[in-house]
Image 1 (cartoon, one colour):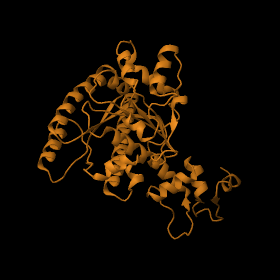
Image 2 (tube, one colour):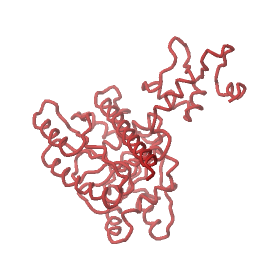
Image 3 (cartoon, helix red, strand yellow):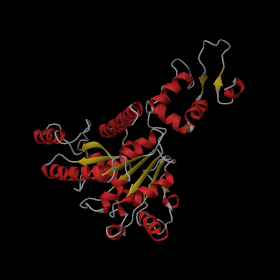
Image 4 (spheres, helix red, strand yellow):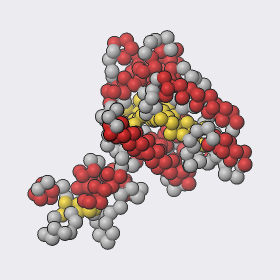
Length: 356
């Protein structure tokens, strides 16, 4: 890049070639492919660190290049994560909301899909049972007319109390129960959502799918066939543990017979109390069966208070420990996905080297 081009992007050139090139906020935004507001947010949460001893925010270009290279997940294929467990009351929707918001706050473009006919996630964003398009209409149009209207169905969240400029949602309606019953009778129903998501494969970094409890039919099979990853929210009791064991068998069958690209990120414990031996026992038993996130989401009344005002915890009470725990969980998710991608890349390279 020629110096005259660089200066347009807020880069300060030095006569001494040994001194580093430096950019301002606008230059950093251009180099990283993000908005200035997103750069400010990344600074606020400690993701980006400006040069010390400089009054205004400045960054060395080399630092930004290294930072961008470390973000293995920002570029490349869209990551689709289903949050599922056949047991209800395990914080699936709460987890979807808070992970989605935290990812959006870090600069990722995130789409939430509400597949639960109860529509709790849609209610939070004030888009439940809309008179215009919902996930029901999206599936119906694709089945009847082979029309993919996904871009028309996606709603921004910025105007809601829980909203963020990088966070979008496909809302649900109470008609989805009938849709699931219909899809169970249709050949190809399991891969319907997978084909639909191809229409936005280059437009989002993450898609998070909130699923209904108590169903092991297309309501679970369809999102899992459309996903790269699955996260299993659960609570530390025996009923939840038993549900996890049954669900793990279903996951293994789907991975073996239908979607070999699906990876189990692990189980997340919510409503966890460190001082209860029974909770520790359930966690230990679970770790023998399936990966478990290090982060436990503790019981806090702020979760229910945030629900009342329809806000994610990072927006409702950002200084609370519960908001910090969800941020730590997001870190773990990003690290786990990065490790899985790196491992797959290594396996692919080995296959090429071996001539397979």
